[in-house]
Amino acid sequence: MNEIATRPPSRDELAVLADQARAVVDTEFVPRGLRGNLPAVYACVLAGRELGLGPMESLRKLHMIDGRPSMSAEGMVGLARRAGHSIDGDIGPDSATVKGTRADTGDTMTVTWTLEMAKAAGLVGKDNWKRYPQAMLWARAASQLCRMLFPDVVTSVGHTPDELELSPEDRVVDALESLPAPGDPADVIETPDPEPVPEPEPEVEADPASVIEPTVLEANAREGDDPYGVEADADHEVERLANEYEQIVAEDGEQASFVAPAGAYREDK
Image 1: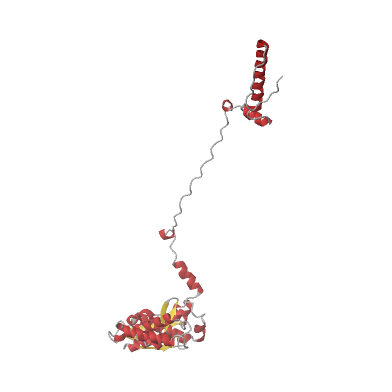
Image 2: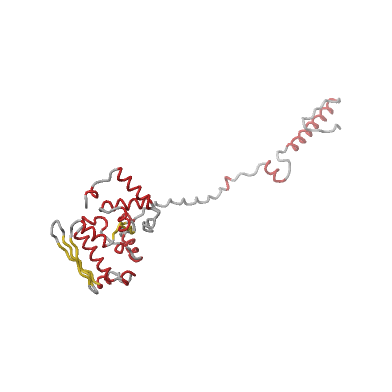
């Protein structure tokens, strides 16, 4: 990496990068997946800067696959050679071999990919592998070499888009692997104990001795008579007073005054 890539950008540089991103965000120079998305274009330019790439080179060589940045094998080889390292190799009908040598330590490595390896990995069924098998073998070998021999160069973009592109079956496997293992405490959901249901109270038969006989008022109300017996009591009182009056008249031989109780009426005999 060069000095520009290793030092943090200044405010003035950030402003210039933002202006550049704003200027091209809606143009055809921006990949379809980023076009019109200013924050994404700006982030791509900043990520490329950390790798020593210019703004437009960043837009061409960096790709986001499932939230992870990636770069083509050609881009990785270019970064390694720009840093002074050496990469060469051979391509055959059914295999590709890539060799690399570090400029600082002299370390070397050789990586080979064959069609048999690609078949075992389930890759040969994809369109690119059907149309360009030799180029795809070389790309696999080169990206693997860069990850293993030049990790300080490729840093966060050590995989190609093809390597990060998951098939539907791979996505299912990844989803299953992310689930907690059986018996894992994270997989156990505690549920509260259900509240006890109260038992119904037993019916108690009434004690015959405790049964209260209906009162006179209640009996009269049920029979349709005067419920409080007011009329019956008044008639009884008038008759009693009339009898007393007749007895007094018979004894004294003269008329006696008689006042009927309020609410009662009786004709004189």
